[in-house]
Length: 169
Image 1: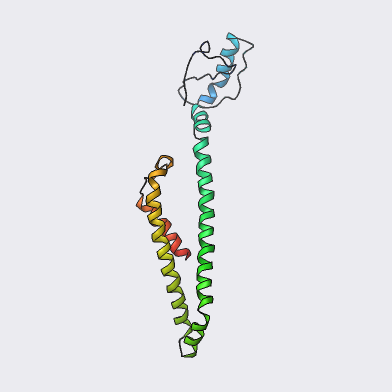
Image 2 (image 1 turned 90 degrees about the vertical axis):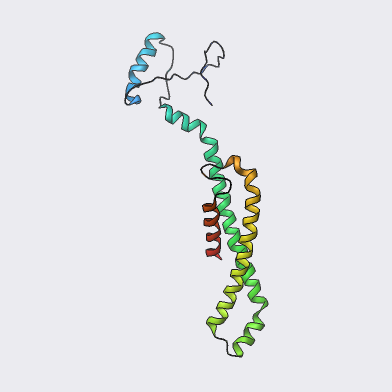
């Protein structure tokens, strides 16, 4: 939020000079510096930058930081989902070792056993993705104020995340 007001109204010892130009604004910096020096030789002029860089640096800092933290936490969540899914499938297979041994003794082929284990893992993953989608749709109303560039119920995002988790599974 930028508010332009007189230094006499709210003096804090620091001011920002904004100059409108045609063309490259940084080329005009020496002329502005000379004009300021002609008015007051004691007035320091430093940190010259375009208004776009000034606004981007100040106003977008917190949203960018929040987005980076969200990305970090999303990566951690995907990693936890991968480890958890691996643990559940490994536990399921370990629990059925005897059954798998009996099936192989009765003539079941290795690809058939792998398909059986994959089917069990996929059903668990589908159940988890379904429950996750229900939870995500329920919480998007709360989080809609911090979403940028996507809607609260963005179907493409939900589909992409669901597909990613199913591929991981």
